[in-house]
Length: 325
Figure 1 (tube, rainbow, N blue to C red):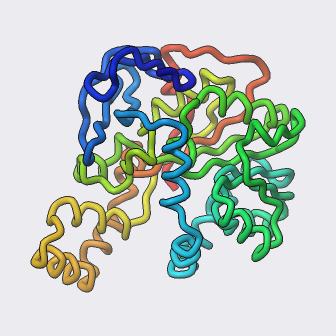
Figure 2: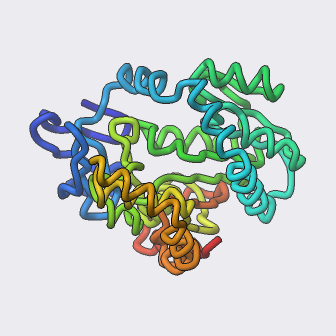
């Protein structure tokens, strides 16, 4: 089975023998297991890979079943102020590199981030494979959104000043082809922003296989700050900034679920803890301490299109400057 740069050399349902798509190492160890899926971790760069690796037709079905329009609308409406502040913060960071210009958001969902980006003076375009979500973004926010794969759309070269991929890259089977096409459509010096769950995070360390953001088989890859930075440098980008973070309430909910389980007593205990607000208050105060050590549950990398092709070197993981939010 050949999935882009992921070469499966044995019956992946029984054995796991691949070349890592980031560092080509063939040595992996078991990190965890969710239902029938193993999370195998590269001993070279730390990348996690879901095994067995779903076929393309399975991935399409998973997307359609997982990201239902009504659920997406309910999620954004129920946490409207949170998402508004989150996207404004991300746009503030983007503007520190690119104050304006053409912005492409890959995996734009129902278009809330794109709507904020347009309000922040960007000329916006979106891509969303879920057709219902794409149509909602078009009709509700009057956005330009394509419901197709990036390489099928065939944008002209050097079209965009900024490309964003929030919680998308972990879903992509062929990492190198995707990043190569993004590099093609970025203008010289254009900015790529990638966000993904962080397998090296404190939340993952505490929750282990119960970590809610593993999400196999929807998530094919499980990045670390180092592995993601290495991949970007290898595919022709200069990493400028690496951040890790997570919402405090998500941290509390995930760890309590993992530690307490889902029995009636556990659910009552979790509810009492949430109502007290003590855990949330504590995490809010101290979480920046682990963010600065790149242990936040989400990793954001800001990288610019390099003027010449970059090659992976031993200094790759140290290339970006690290910062908290």
